[in-house]
Amino acid sequence: MNTYKRRQTLAAGVLGAVLTGAAVLPSPALAEPGDDASVRVTVDIDEIREPGVLALSIAGDAVALSEDGSTLLVRQFVGTLPTVTVTDTRVADEVPDGANWAVLGSATDFTGAAGQAPITADHFGWKPRLLDGGETGLVTEGEEVVTSLDEPTQPGNNVGLVDQELLVSAFDSEAVASDSYSVNADLYLRTPAEVAAGAYSSTLTLSLFE
Image (cartoon, rainbow, N blue to C red):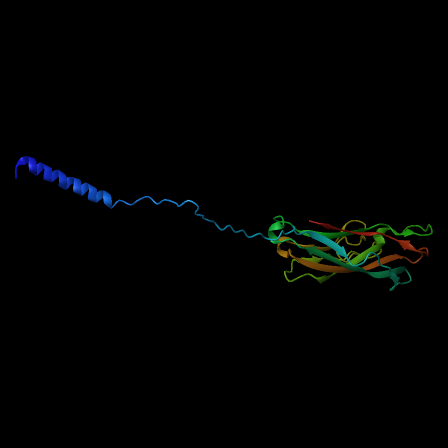
């Protein structure tokens, strides 16, 4: 084979190799006109949850004291505070860090309906009684507050309900959240034996603080 024919044969072989290699390359995929594609979209929507609250409620708005336990020197009139309930509907992460709550009470002077001299609030005392403090042990009732006619049962507690006195408290608001707690109190008005007869009234105000 002469040189010219050898070159033609090699060129044909190279061309054949190039063509053969080109034949195995993938063809681009083409979308057909009118074809559709879809995507499924989902979402979970939770119910709207109102923020919890810390609230105070009282089972009644009045209590009548009746005479019981009077002596020759002191007349005593007793009753029971309607049940006081503290309800906390908050979850723990809604409670401020380090918070605690307390219910405090104070009374006005007893005013006579017929113009009698008032009986001052230092003659009015209470002994709180926890009815339902839950299971944490962190909700407790306040100490007894006796009247100015009594000897103190705790240092300085014979002052009556003149100023804000503790009815019930929680040491750790977060630990006792999402529950309710109830308390009442024995109430007593102690007056000198010569107190003027007639109807009297006072307002006992309970306040919840956190």
